[in-house]
Length: 381
Ligand code: NAD
Image (cartoon, rainbow, N blue to C red; front, side):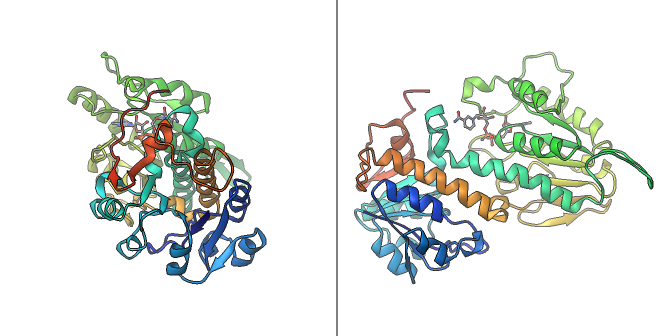
């Protein structure tokens, strides 16, 4: 069978779902590979590089979609791509099954099989296919780089002939995958780094990375994330008040705030309120990684950079992985390649779409004319 990757059509999207390296691996599974001309250019992969890796370069999107049995891409297909999704084809892509009625209906009616990368179960065995994590890791790192780029000072403290420079203070709110990556980047640049999460079990990870966990003066037990598969739920009003009081105290102290707090299936909680933004020093920078889900910060404008009256820059970009397209394409195409490995147990270049397999079942949202979303809970950890 043939695996093909079209050029992404969402404006500004620079990632590509197949790299020359991943194509070589896919060929070892027995597949032929095809790519649309120019699909890798924005991520730094030329048509020639694909050709050298044995990939057929196809001129048009139409030609590519028609030729490929399996289509690997990054963004959920747009209307003009959905028409190519016909019976017998398998699409592997982010697909947003809960919020993409058009795509789900089109795939079901066509009888196409769709594997939604955001639905890969977050169990140990599936980590190598976990594109949400690989992209969140990049977003967290890039958030720090972006903050630095907008911050007029050093991260690290220095004693120089021209004077003593204090280290920057960075606060990371939410220490999941993106938050931990931000903490890692911030600590390695030399900033004094603080982090907070409602799940107290991450305190140890935060501290082992050289950052300081912010504890609240709060008697009751905080959230037990382990009970909900590592995800947070909505905080009690008392807990929230204690959290906001702590942030209020820290706001005038910190130079950079990176927020990553999310609760599954909900708007992002508002945690850095307008009065905290107003209390920050001129020249401070906030990066709100929750912007796409409504933002953690009062004042975030999605996909924009705004500067407040008191001179605080608030960044609400939602395309951080795409801003590091070479890296994100490498990791994403590796996630896809691992998915293909599991779909090809015989290494014979033929998809064996085994719906008994927890990971494949979990990620499959339409199969042979049926909607298979949401999946039953996985049986194994
Ligand atoms: P996420 O993107 O849903 O949320 C980001 C973070 O925000 C979470 O750590 C959450 O606790 C935190 N948060 C929510 N409300 C908050 C609030 N009011 N204040 C402060 N923080 C708040 O989560 P994620 O990064 O995708 O993953 C969370 C966890 O899931 C990970 O840390 C990990 O333990 C687990 N996980 C496991 C696997 C695996 O086993 N394969 C893969 C990925 C993640």
